[in-house]
Length: 162
Image 1 (cartoon, rainbow, N blue to C red):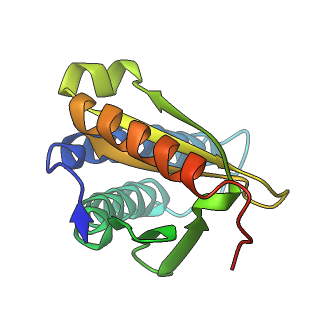
Image 2 (cartoon, one colour):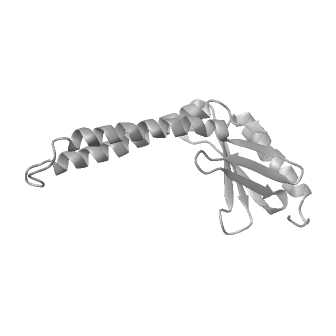
Image 3 (cartoon, one colour):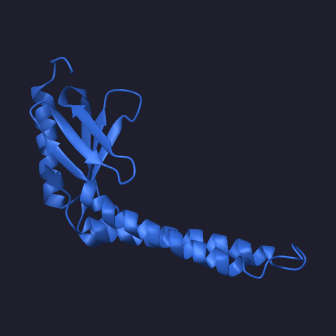
């Protein structure tokens, strides 16, 4: 089983921090708004500190999840399919038969370009969750994986999916 490039942790941690800061700002801002006498005259004095403590706790949880996410993310090109394991709280095991692959893209967001990473997106036949993404790859590995998946999909064309 292949793991992602460790640099993906940087991206996931940065995203977790940004999201936590936004969410924390909303929570603390709402608490400040509620403590205004015109809104709630008898607002508890501990409302704003409690909101700040909640924001910090949620930020720490987001950081922990982002860190742990790397440890559980794996993928493998098997004989007949692409196998992916991921998920911190809910473990998800995805099997994509090569015969179901429609096309494969490689993408690089600005944050991924900054950290030297890329994501491969595999589009499959079907209506529910018809694409899977493999993030945290080096650009060279992403191109190699994209080409390997393309070749495997061509080789299995016409075969029945399991």
